[in-house]
Image (cartoon, rainbow, N blue to C red):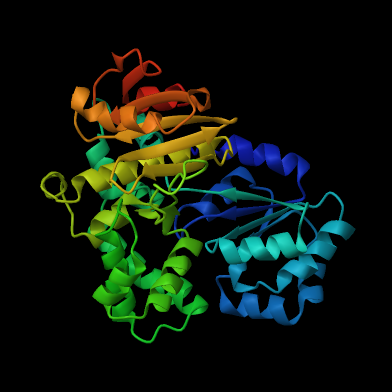
Length: 398
């Protein structure tokens, strides 16, 4: 079963005018399957095989000399030295297209900006969105529906939706082992694998919270510098992201620590021991997991059009907080995220207070994103403040 990715057309458009594209994303997010589907006539080389990676690294001229057509170079993070040779190939082989994939983000971007500036477009492939899955399930199975909680627990890795007989628990337990062995060990020297596993689980229980590296390091039994390094590695390999607080022109009242989110809620639920809807609904982390899910879906929406919005949260020293601020075209949209189906006037207090920190000319929209069945206005005096269902909001492009 193939699940259509809404980003496909954008990738095809970019390849028309760029000689190379680097597709970045977490391990097993579907990068290889996607590029092989939309570029079926390209030759394919995977550096996942150590023998091929070694041959390319030791004899790059010979390696490129054997490539006579458009090519997909898969898992290129294993041969970072190829980038300087790739620059020559792109410049000398006019018209040839190179599709690169990799699961390590920041290190590869440095190689691209150093060696392929102006020659390579960088595209982030995130996991399947809830609505990509929902459309496919309902298209193939009559009267079958999937709700948000089903998706949160299972996550957005394609394999779980294609191979119905594997449980998320088995998939993610193997995923964690493979991720540590293949990605982490190639980046840093981990003395004890159990320490790193404990570190990831300690991050999971902090989802949607301010990240305090001193507390994190103490809980795991590692140094603060190691906690920072390991967090950077998880971010570089697309497993989590840090959201910074909004503090532009607002002064010293704003908390400067970032909040932590995982790029996949299925992996997050696995790390928290959540295997069913009952587990999720009874979890003390329910609100934070829901917040992570909504923010992921918002970022995926923008990624479909290759837009990278600037996103923040707002929190001041008195713990006044709003979950999501999106800046686009010089304007900001302010959203709070609630698990409830029926927010009331008390639920909009944070947004009302937060708006007072901004010049009203900056603000485009404000609202609550929640599980309501239908969108409705709750306070027309505050930028037409609305209670939004996720689907309706995304259809309106936020």
